[in-house]
Each structure stands twice: as structure tokens, then as C-alpha cells.
Length: 323
Figure 1 (cartoon, rainbow, N blue to C red):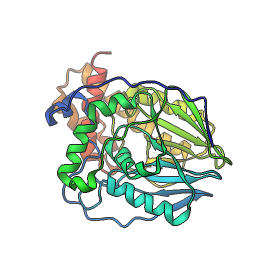
Figure 2 (cartoon, one colour):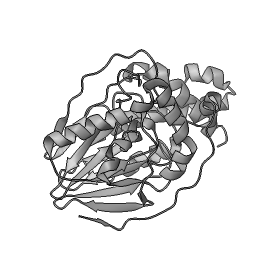
Figure 3 (tube, rainbow, N blue to C red):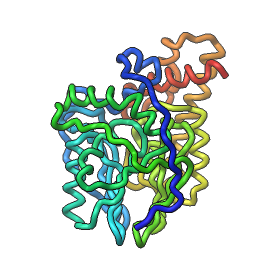
């Protein structure tokens, strides 16, 4: 098993932990952090293609009952070993995934993907430390974890408890532009994206199935959370369209989807968010009013719209008011 053409880059160092108000208005995304009041979910794995297993996360906020297990997570079994596509949202979630892998194969876990900084995608990584895999992340992920990781960890501990929360795990392979991972009978092509959903989004294309794993660059059914650049995300959508895949495993939503219509729905929302925010800025609409008016025509099309659209507007307004 080999990694070809990896780009190594030390991530930029971040700032210290922020307060909740600083998080809301200073760009520290609080999406996917635990809140109270959500019933436990019953999880299972879908074999979406030969050797590829994915668990659908619920369209819900994280809670003590669901262990922050709200993202689509899973693994790919190759001839020479296993690659974990997403590690889960907490130590407890990662341990669940680790057990599911053990039910299906005894091959070694060689790689764990850390697709971006948000806690529902990276805090399960601690469950795989004993396997001594290569933890793979975007070249900017280390800096993002320095800036946010401890804040996220403390929030998880507050809700889940120390024994279930997990710890910050840093990438040991940092992808600056692109890299390939060879599992023996299938190759995974990795792409480090420009600032979009976050500033450290990593996607993956599987040669054997043709499936694209765009992580949270693709939300389906659940409203996307903007934590990077609205203009950049629309740009990266065009890049995803050119990768040659017809189907994908999104970061949130059904475990396997048609890529073109799913990206179309996402682009429609983000374009609406862009255009209506620009109009609000041009009209000198206060941001406090804009968060209640912009993109309201999308309300019935997305789960958790009321939870996240206002923050998306805030992020978009701050980006677009200085165009």
C-alpha cells in the first residue's frame, strides 16, 4: 500500500479559544455542536458500492443522546487495507464505527480521512489511534484545529462528558493540492479545495466505484452551513462538476445520490443567498433584519432551515458587504 504524490505542508497556527459571542460574529462555526433535546437514533451501515459502507447521519442537531453522530461516516475496504471516509462526531461515535468495521473485515485500518475542521467529522478520530493509521487532512486543517479544536472539545465535554467526547487529532499527511492513496485494487484521488464550506475542505474520488466523496462540500436535504466563503463555495461546486463523477456520498443526506441534481439544489440555495444578501447590502438593510428576510423562499426545501439560515446570512453579509 502506498501514497503517491503527497503534498506536505505545515498548517498555519490559529488563535486561542473564543467566547460564544466571538464565535457567532467572528467566524467560528458553531454548527454541529451538541445541544439538548434530541432522541437517540438507530444507526446502520449501507453498502453503497462493493466494499464501501456508509452510515447516514440524521438531519438533526447534535445531542447527548446521539453522541454527535449526525454526519455521514463510513469506510472503504481495499485489497490491502481499510480507509475510513469520515471518523464521526465524538469518541463514542468513532468507537461505534470502529466496531462496525470489525464486523465486516479484519484488514488493517490504514487511513482515516479528516475532511474538514467541524466536530461532527473529526472527533471520532481518537477511536482509531490504536490502529496507528495515517490521518489525512487538508494543508490548512492543522491551523483550523489549532484555532478551534480545543473550543469544540470543551463544548463536547460539557454535553457528552469526558469519556465520550474525544480529543483533537491532527493530520499526519497534509494535502496541499492533491494526492493519491492506493489500497491495492482501488485508488483514491484526493483534492484540497479552496476556501468554501470551510477553509480546509478535502474531497476524494474512488477509482473502483467512480463515487465522489465531497464531504460537506455537498449537503442534500439538510441546509448547508457556510463557514468559509460563499463565493468560494460556488466556485468549488463548478470544480466538483468537472471531476467526472455521476454519483456521490454527501457529507449530510442520503448515503448515495446523483451528483448533478444534488449540486444543482445546493447551488440554487447558495446563489439565492448571494443575490439576496447583495441586495440587502445595497439597500443598507441592517444585518439584524437581513437574517430574517434573506433566502426565505428556500425555507421549505431544507431541514434545519431556521437553525442555520440566519447564521449563513450573517456570514454572507460579512463577506459581501466589502465587495
